[in-house]
Length: 114
Length: 111
Image 1 (cartoon, chains in turn green, brown):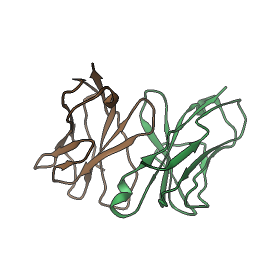
Image 2 (cartoon, chains in turn cyan, yellow):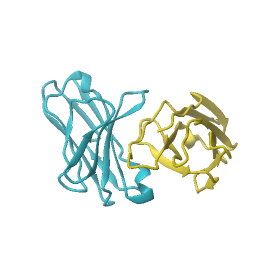
Image 3 (tube, one colour):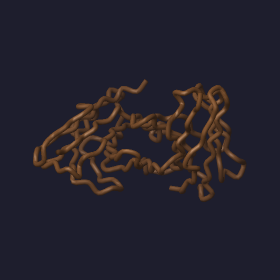
């Protein structure tokens, strides 16, 4: 069973607020990822990190930012939330070597911006 | 990474085997075939992967054709809890660890 956690699970917030979605893993994985998924639609990679102090933008452009100061922690921040940010955000991690391609996903954060 | 093609949906009777096909005709020699599934908006779950040999674990079996251009995921005794979107993904063999999820196949297991 993978040990990757996301908080909050659900968040309803007003336009213009700053929010941070938390993601933590206890597996010591060096690689971490953020995906965005609208209901019934495909998952899209928005950010990834291959280690501490390393972050890259994913395939889908996003106004969010991420940081990786500690191996186990990969928070995602929206400086000013808008209704267009309403979506589900999924965090994942993967290990080293051949395990690099097995990603473990958290339960997701469902964000609603009103 | 090679592109994959999967049927958009399939049905299966509970207790029967579910066979989910995937075409990946442009797969390169060092790329693996990975299968994940996503149960109703939960985070995707890794199922199995293979390079060229058939693979089996406690969840499923993966059959890869000899030319590696297609594969089949087999759930031997499908249950209602196996209802999910199943993703076939081809990647690996390099330093790019990014997964690209397509639309997958929605498997509905019927009682």
